[in-house]
Image 1 (cartoon, helix red, strand yellow):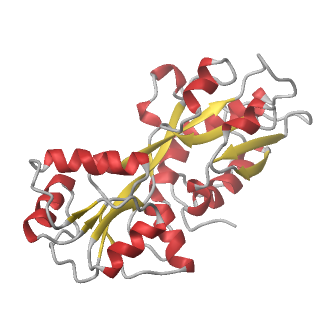
Image 2 (cartoon, rainbow, N blue to C red; image 1 turned 180 degrees about the vertical axis):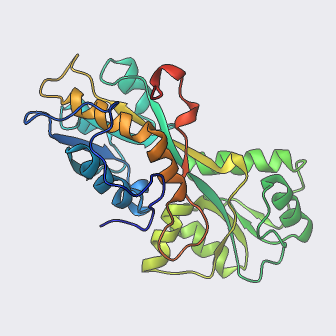
Length: 283
């Protein structure tokens, strides 16, 4: 199902882009393995129908969590999309299973807080200032013990000047939904990925809202990796290249920028193709 993204083009029906290889009968199906974030965040619901309509390819999407690269090693994927920091990505590429990662889009981590916002951080674009205000008001802050999330919080704590943690800063080994629930119960703050938070709110809502989203440190870059034929056979490198090229097209990057998650007025996806070396960008 498509989202309401729309966005990048003139609205006219167009044939395949001149920079995207046209499909053949053998290469029409593209097998995409992806972490669940772009699925839950609605982005594929907007992009994949557009790609299929514009190019004639068909995408078989599999949401693989937590491991997207194991199936790709076994030859079950033509292209993989994951966070740049995915624990399996480096070995997958260095072992020759995948091509160099291309940055395609990102979505944010979020500082979540209670609707009353006792530290007055709502809408700040500076995460360190938000952390200083939480420390100054001694509002509860619950550490979300996911490796990347805790690391982010440590950066902001240092950037805020290493405020004394006594009393308000709680590191009790909680992670994901348990950390979120604890923060909500205490009228406190916590970091989590915006997309998993929005998904969790649909099933078991808590009294927290996204407060800070726009500090660049909150960006979670995602990459596409084409599977190579070095170790596996039956890989649709032609179709994978077409999909990767589609993601980097200026029209598609603008579409990513324009996409909005249903019911959320704030932008939650940003294009990241400009971060690639020029050789990868469309001519």
